Amino acid sequence: MFNPTPLNLPFYPFKITQRDGLHYIFDEARKKHLVLTPEEWVRQHFIKYLIKEKQFPVTLMQIEGGLNLNQTKKRSDILVYTNNGEKLVVVECKAPSVAITQATFDQAARYNSVYKAKWIVITNGLNHYYAQIDHENKGFAFVEELPVYSLLV
Image (cartoon, rainbow, N blue to C red; front, side, top):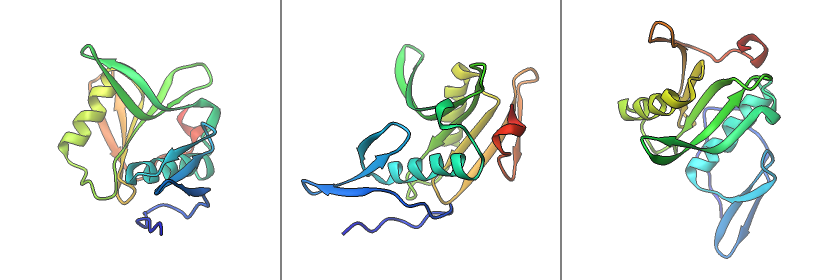
């Protein structure tokens, strides 16, 4: 039986199936079933949170997109664009059992050194951190809550 970790996010109904001893979750954004790992559980919840609570357009989200970082292929969890194609928010998701440490922030900052997004979000489903990035002055500021999409663009 599937017994997910309760997250510090609203409840959302998901299509969860079982096959060959594995649980799968249906990713509505990518229209496919994915192996349900603890990190995927967090990623799917946060995608729903962005769409339902923060009015982010699903059509402007890239999920598990690739990037080249120091000649190495990496994969970001969620990247959100503006209507004109600018990178707006990069989200790094971790499993609930993974503590968010300086290394997690460093990873997101490395990805954003390529993306140059205006916001970085880090979550393990239990704790969420939102940072507005000031690329011009090479700084950032943490905020308590991520604004709705229309206030970010």
